[in-house]
Image (cartoon, rainbow, N blue to C red; front, side, top):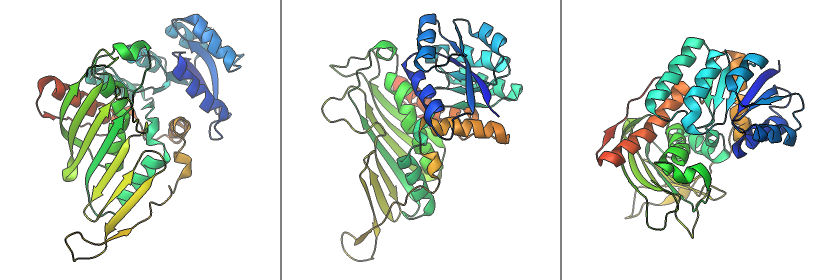
Amino acid sequence: MTKRAVLVGCGAMAKGWLKALAEAPALIGRVDVVGLVDMNIGAADALRDAFGLTGARSGGDLDAMLALTKPDLLFDVVVPSARRDVVLTGLRHGCHVLTEKPMAASLAEAEEIVAAAKAAGRVHAVVQNRRFIDGVRRIRQMIASGALGELTALHADFFIGAHFGGFREQMDNVLLLDMAIHTLDAARFMAGAQPVAVYCHQTNPRGSWYRHGAVANAIFEFSNDIVFTYRGSWAAEGANTSWESAWRIIGTKGTLVWDGADRWEAHRVAGDDGFFRPLEAIDVPAVSQESQTHGHASVLAEFLDAIAEGRVPETAGSDNINSLAMVFGAIESARTRQRVQIKIQETS
């Protein structure tokens, strides 16, 4: 059955949502966008025209639009500071809500949103689209297979000189809050473990075009005695990594290296003698569920499938709040220069 949806926040990011709905085979015909909302009504009109949404209404008042169109779904693509009010408005109108990351501007707001979704009996999920890429899924599958032995550590490097302009360059804690959550969530997903504590050092180096927090170095303690380290910068010119980060995954029997793009290397110990033990190369198998590797389209499809099947989606807010807790734990650690424990919430 086709679901009726209103999209709020008609800036550049909204185009990715509408492109996926229009072009992804798993989504075609499943959603009818009946309303577009933005403080700049001209932006809503332009987005409607660009995607040929001739039947969609446009406006600047979300509450009025939801009352008028009575949609099943709300797609939230607003800036983080506006997220809480947008999501709570959608839930109040009986919508299932799929929201951009981060899911809230604070943990208190995230907890309020999770509680509101539960009380409303609606599905609330977050666009952690980088969970749904081939590389992340392959690493998760490889770890779970035991081919590397028991997982002991994950290491991720993210170094990109990104010149966005706009609101990001004025944000506090810009790297941790706006980008690092992708990598932190991926690490939690790959490991199949939960964060316990973090120590983080954050800086804004000379030459940075961001106002605050363009660089972060963090050590996370995970359950099962797993360590995850993150080194990141949005003000590092000259040798960009992939947007997916460069990864080293270490187990008790071997190591997997992924550059975040096309280069894979995995070896495990193949003997008991020598100063350096002999190694053998091992394959990193293709993902068993290829449908889960299409980024934004896969997030949207998983959201719709969860609603249809009456289940919790993989990126439900009630679980994603634990990735957000990693972000805010790191921010608190950077502020206090202390190790910070991370409070975990169980998915319900």
